[in-house]
Image (cartoon, rainbow, N blue to C red; front, side, top):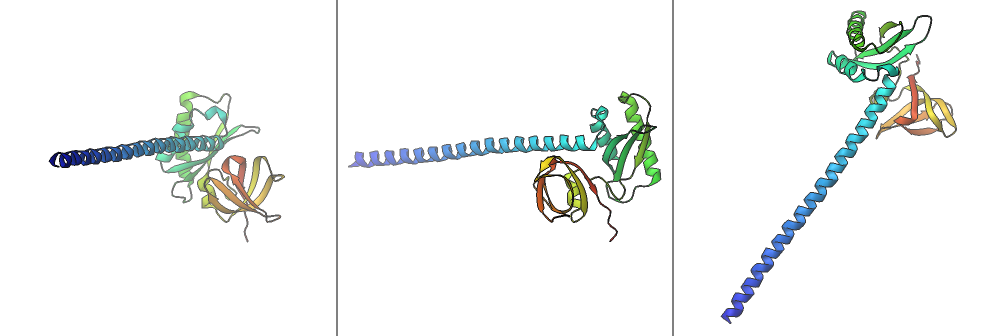
Length: 216
């Protein structure tokens, strides 16, 4: 009887230890799975962010020669309290490299600030001399019918009318005018100004977008 009790006690202890071991084991496994999933999700989100950043830079810097200098220009301009809206080369009798810039606080940019930024940009451009031939450097504000490029721009101008050009046909449309209805998960929902069709598009499908000035 005494031996039986001892044996029963030992079995119980073994079971308890075994149960605790399994519990710890499964908790540990769950933690590992969670950690792996979290890491995959983290890297996936980082990858998505990198793709979006690259997409934004390509749309902002439409002068391919400046691709290598883009990060430095963005960092410097942001540090000074401004934001690059778009960079294009205007081909005319005198080639003009246009930097469209706005203040980070969204107040109006002044002529004095444009002159200051022009000097800063010139110094950075002169470091590499990536653009061959003569050109004029122009620093200006976005203006009323400004380009809409980044996701934050669509959120900012929600409810406004925009002129859209797509990179490929969607519902038999390649361009249209529409109101920005909503922004969610890097997708923009528009209401077509012509037929009132509701159109939801990923940002990558929008090739060009500009505000449409409406005084009424």
